[in-house]
Image (cartoon, rainbow, N blue to C red):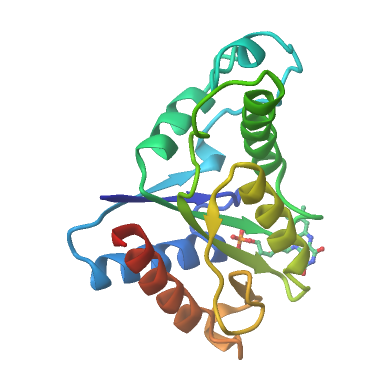
Length: 196
Ligand SMILES: Cc1cc2nc3c(=O)[nH]c(=O)nc-3n(C[C@H](O)[C@H](O)[C@H](O)COP(=O)(O)O)c2cc1C
């Protein structure tokens, strides 16, 4: 079993990365046999969808654009659960947009061209992390939630504000929302969901 963390911040050691790490740490603590891996989108070159309406329209979940997307797609396919982290960047970093755009296009053409079989990430559990400078993370969560729905994934929610996931605002150590506690809870849920 594997859980993949995708950090959408341009800062590798930023708040998004720290919280995604905390979720993965809780996954391992809950189910030590689950392997975890983290990928920073800041280290990858993933360009926009070219709107070619060609390869992905004809072959399910194949994209014609050759860049780091192909490697990440494989990692996502291999994972049994995925943590997506994105900071509030009005509303999310352009690398997150590029990744979602490329994936959603593949899911869209799967249906539009009447391909048979399940979607690549169908029912795969996923969890969301966000970080803001103090602003409301809801816009980020709604973006990620819509993306996950398009991919037919199963987003996990938690019973604490802001419910869609865990967000850190400003200095994480001083954040009264206790984002590290939330990240631990989310990690526990994700570990159970992956094994279940
Ligand atoms: C381009 C950009 C736009 C941002 N827009 C907002 C915003 O609208 N509201 C807010 O509270 N913080 C905003 N921030 C601050 C980041 O959300 C915040 O610093 C967050 O911790 C960054 O994530 P990181 O620590 O993982 O790098 C913005 C930062 C950048 C670079």
